[in-house]
Length: 266
Image 1 (cartoon, rainbow, N blue to C red):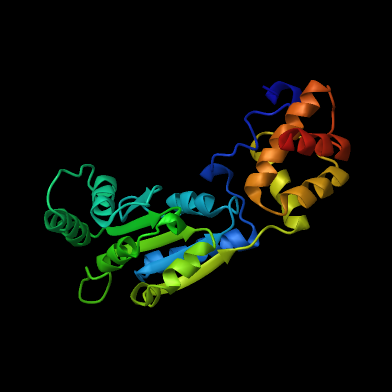
Image 2 (image 1 turned 90 degrees about the vertical axis):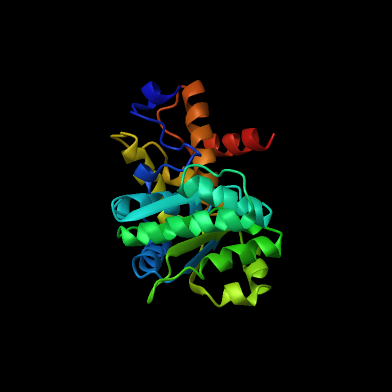
């Protein structure tokens, strides 16, 4: 809607994670490197936590660019609040492409065969469980732990990445056997003011901007509202660009930011 006005090639602040727009802030870069370490060295389980909108899913999507698809099978499950058998079906569907009805034993046997087949073909299996904090059934969490019992002589045949909001830490702490299998934990902290500025500039350049669009005062007002959370930054910046278009503004100033905040909270 506003691309022509702001001389952009694409929408800079979409709220759907775009791995091509990944901004490698210090904390997101560290999260990425820690996850790569767990995957490449087959360490079993990694856990990435952070508040809503902190960029966990964006980091996971960025992993795709670092993993050779001929060496890794990497899948994401986004709705894991399931009973144990249904979770096994969801994993089979993600990894194998189908999950026919059968007993839990049959389902697990098919899953284990797939993991062994991947290993024999030199393929490492990586499974990310997004929104893992919504798993309220400890039996379901324990089912994930049981997947780690599938091993070769010296390595796990599957790498699990658990993503979730901070309550995930409490859920895991109540399940000691799984907690002890987690080799890497990392919590994504919000961006600071300077990194927020860098993030906005990065997204605008990615979208084709050839000039500055947000004033420094606007960035400060944005930061105070968004508190360094990329999703909030995206939503507010997007609203600012829309209001700026409606007012035929050439620059987003703090007044437009404050009006955008009021508009969003109405």
